[in-house]
Amino acid sequence: MEPVLTVKNLKTSFMTSNGEVQAVRGVSFQVEKGEILGIVGESGSGKSVTSMSILRLLADTAKIVDGEVIFGGNDLTKVTNRKMREIRGEKIAMIFQDPMSSLNPLIPVGEQVAEMIRVHHKELSKDELNEKVFELFGQVRIPEPEKRYKSYPHEFSGGMRQRVMIAMALANRPELLIADEPTTALDVTIQDQILKQLRALQKEYETSIIFITHDLGVVAELCERVIVMYGGLIMEEATIDDIFEHPKHPYTLGLLESIPAIDQEKANRLSPIPGSPPDMTKPPIGCPFAPRCPYARQICASECPEYVNINDTHRSMCWLLDPDAPADNNPFYSL
Amino acid sequence: MVKYFAKRFAMMLIALFMIVLITFVIMHSIPGGPFTSDRKVSEDVEKALNEKYNLDAPLYEQFFEYIGNLLKGDMGPSFKYTGKSVNDFIANGFPVSAKLGGITIIFVLIAAIPMGILAAIKNGRWQDMTVMAVATIGVTIPSFVIASVLIYTFSFRLDWLPTYGLDTWKGYILPVVALGGYSLSYLARLMRSSLLEVMGQDYIRTARAKGLTELKVITKHALRNALIPVITVLGPTVAGLMTGSFVIEKIFAIPGLGVHFVNSVSQRDYTTIMGVTVFYATFLLAMVFIVDIFYCLIDPRIKFE
Image (cartoon, rainbow over all chains, first blue to last red; front, side):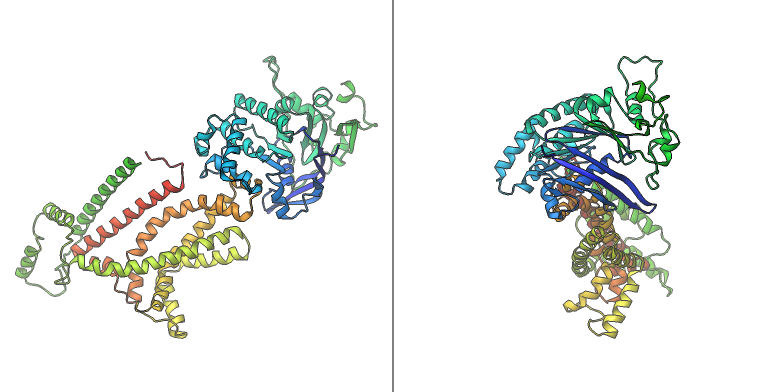
C-alpha cells in the first residue's frame, strides 16, 4: 500500500548569527496508513524540526536545504503557500507540546475549534459548526460541551486544554496527525488518559500519527514503529518489539537503560548517557554519537557509518554492525 | 462588575483629592505669592489684596474653602487677570486644545498602528528600518525643534502652509504633526515590539497550522493580543494631547489651555494653578478609567474583582 507520507533525505538548517545550524541532516522515513510512528530523541536531536519541516511551520530563520516530503502525490517542500494552507489542518494536523500557550488567550475555545473547520469548510452554517464542535468536545471527553464552548483557555486545566487541541487537530479528520510531545507538559495520570484517548480516536478516525517524544515509555504504550534520532540523523528505525528486544544501536541501548523500572533496586541507579548532544553549527564528520558512545572506536569519529538492514523493518547506523567490526566488546554479538 | 467599577470610581475620587491636597500645599510653600512683583507695592495695598482674596487666612481654612467652591463648580477668579475666572480659561482654552489634540490622536493612531504593524511584519527589512529610523527621530528630537523645521520648510521655504493660527484646515497640519510626533513614534515602536512578541507565541503557530492565511493570522489572532500594551499607554497619551501643549501652542499662537500650565506657575496665579491641575488630573484619571473598561472588553483574563 502507498505510504501516507514519505520523507526523503530531508535537510533543515537554521541561519543564525553564529552560522548555519544543521538541525536535520538527511532524514528519510515513511508513515504507513493508520500507523502510529514514534520519533524519539533528546532535546536538539532534530525531531521537532523534522516535524515542523513537514508542515513548513518553522521560524523565518529556518530553511529546508534539501530533500523531499511527499504527501498525496505532492512534494510539500515545493508546493505553493496556498496549497500548503489547504493541507494544513485539513489533511495534516498538528498538536503541540505546551497546551498552556498553544491556544489564543482572547478567543473562546469552542470558537478556536470551530475556526479550524470553517477555514476548510466554508459551506457549513454556524449551527452546523457548533454541532460539530460539541460532538468533538464529547469525543475528547470535555464535560458539558455546550457550556464549555464559550470558556476561555485560562478557565481550563492543562489536560483540558490539550483535549481542546486534540479536538481541534482531529476536527477535519486529517490523514496525518503530528503530535509534538503532546503529553510532556502534563502530569502522569492526565498523560495516560490523553494517550488512551488519542489511540481510541486514531482507531476510529483511521488517522496516521507521528508521535514525537523523548519518553520511550510513552512510545512503548502507543507506537507500532519507532525512529530514534540523534544529532539530526536517524540512528535506528525498527518496530516497537525490535527496539525493546533487539536494539541495534548504542544510543538506543543508552536510552533503554535510562528508563526507570518499577521493580528496580535502590542500589541500581539509573544510568544516564554521559555527555551532551553535539554542536550542530559544526556537525561531526563521523557518527554524531561517537563522543558519548561507550563502544566508540577510531573510525566512529572520522567516518559516518552506512545504514545496515537487520530485517525488512529494522535498520541501524553503527560501525559495530559492520561485517569487519570486532566481536569483543560488541554488544550486538552478545545480545 | 458594577461593584468593581464603583470601587474603581471611589478610588479615583480619593486619588483626585490627594492630588488637590498635595498641589495646594506645595503651591503655597513656594516663596512669593500672586501679588509679589518687581515693583514695590505698599504694604497696605498688599494687605488689602491678601484680605480680598482671603490669602491671610490659615492654610487649612483656605483649602476647605477652595474644596467647597470646587464642589460647586467654581474654580475661583484668576489672581492675575482681573475680571477673568479660571472657569473662563478652561471654557475658552480647552475646546481649542481638545480639538487640536483630538485630531492629533486620530492622526497618531492612523499612522502609528499601521507603521508598527508594517515594521513588525517586515522585521529586519528596509520597511522596518525606515519606520524605526523615523520613529527614533520622533522620540529623540524635541517638539519645538520639529515645529521649527516644519515651519521653515513648509511655511517659509515652500509657502504651502500658514505659520500660525487654526483658522483654516491647513493651519492644523503643522501643529498636529509637531504635537503628535513623539506619541506617533512611541506608539509605532510599541506596536512593533508588541506584535513581534505576539508573533513568536505558540498560539500563532497553532493558527498557522490550521491553514489560515497570514493576513487572518495577524488580524484575528495577533493584533488583538498585541494591542493590549498599546491601549495601556493610550490613556495618558490622550489626556496629555487633549489638554494642550505649552510649547506647540506658543509656537503656533494657538489660544489653548497649554499656556496656563506654565504661566500660572511662574505668576503664582494660585487659582489657575489649582484649576488646570484639577482639570488635567480629572481628565487623566477618567482616561485611565476608560482604558480599564477597554481592558475588560478585550481580555477575558482580567477579572472584575
